[in-house]
Each structure stands twice: as C-alpha cells, then as structure tokens.
Length: 213
Image (cartoon, rainbow, N blue to C red; front, side):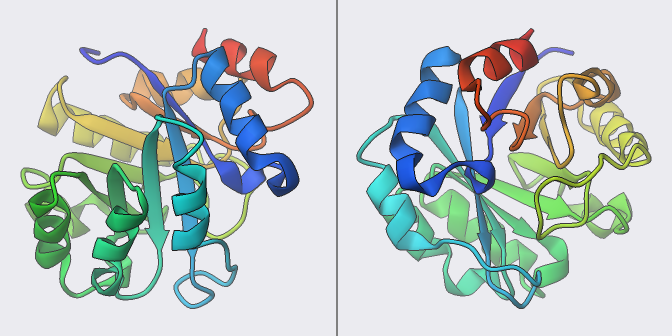
C-alpha cells in the first residue's frame, strides 16, 4: 500500500442533537474525513439529510466533507451539494445514466469525484471510468441502512481495483467496518475507511484511535 489510511466517520450514526460536538470529538481524535450519506427514499428506501445540514456543519469544522449521494439522477444536485460545502462527491453507477457527466461536473468544480458500486454490482460496470475518477467507493453492505454486517466477498473487488489502478489510487470501503474486521478491508487494498456505529458511540475518541491503529 502506497497511501496512508484515512478514516471517514459516517454521521449517519451520530447523535444529531449534538452533531457538531461529536464531529469535533472525532476530528480531535484523529479522523481526517467526514462521511455524509445523502439518501432520497428512492434509490435507497431510507431518507436522510441534504444541503442545509451540510452547510450548517461546514461552519464547525475544516474536515474533508466526503459526500456520498445515494440518490437517483445525482447530476441534478451535484452543484448544490458542492455549494453547500462538499469537498468530494460520490455517486452510484446504478443511479444514473450519465456517469461521465457526473464526473465532469464534480471535477470542473475542483472537487474529488468518486463512483460507487453496490455489493451485487460487478467492477465491470465502472471499469471504463476508473481512469477518469479520483476514487472508487466499494459498498460492503446494501446501501440505505447503518449497522449491517460486512460482506466479505467485496474484498475481491477491492483487490482487483487496487491491482489495476496501482498504489496511488484511492479506494474507499463503506459498511459494517469495525475494529475486528478493518484489517480485512485494508489488506484487500482499501485506504479510506468509512465507519459509523464503530465511531459514534459512548467512546468516540477511543473508537477513532482503535480504528486508526
């Protein structure tokens, strides 16, 4: 592995009554990114926050905002999420018939463009875009809900992308990661780790340090 590990805690598992406080605790403990899951109730059955939450949270931290769009036709909203404070935008290959346009929209704004695949989606679905994006997000659970168990078979996808793209390419993995299985994802080739319930619990600082180790 040529890249250092980056921890991107998912605020989907945070306490929204004290969100800014919990984010600062994770940041002070060493987390570098903040993973922000946006769900529309269509592409995935759940619904979450949108631009106003991101804009409000932007006032409290300089962390890299890793915005994960689990929404249909993400091209409709990419500019708005960037305006709200996104530093990187991830869209799902399954959610759009305009992936090239999505990538170009994000990169034109000077932000990090990433494409994501669900556990049942083969890498072949994004293969022709690998040399155009800045990162791939491999979902290790079915998108839409937190607290699911890590699907070990996605490690093969991670390893394939790492071998194909080399050590300098960013591969993010999202879903079911905790201190007991984080090594599996890293050993497969992931360098950016999303963790929700494994971070936002009663011991945020200890959880971040444990994962970073």
